[in-house]
Length: 147
Image (cartoon, rainbow, N blue to C red; front, side):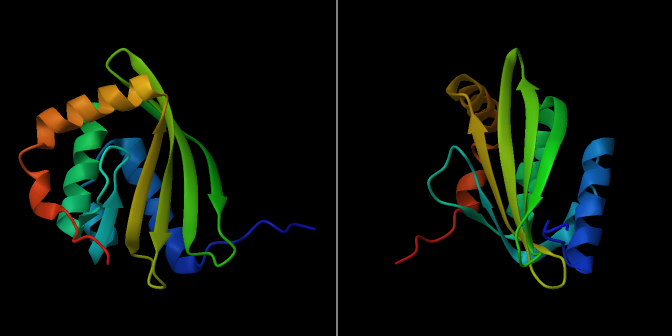
């Protein structure tokens, strides 16, 4: 018996588009997959970045920072609305591994995109590159702290 959780059809379609864009290293179609109030949770920042525009800016930038990016495994939640994607990549001469935790709404739009990265040397290289490219732009997208 197969007890592996299945994604909802809308989420499966959006995830297939995501994988296609990543494989082509072209995220121009990303805005169509993002909920207007989407949130990005960075492995380097305490507070999340809020808005589809912020999520798109960050993911497009990280696509240009990473080399040799590859997804390895995909796990889904029982409700069919969230996935965990294991990946590896390089930032300059530093290798890293990580996971993308992506939550979708019922319509298949990304509402939450969280990234975790290891080891520390890879995370530091990623943080340095992202900071140089986006440091002046990202503070405007910080979400208000939850009370």
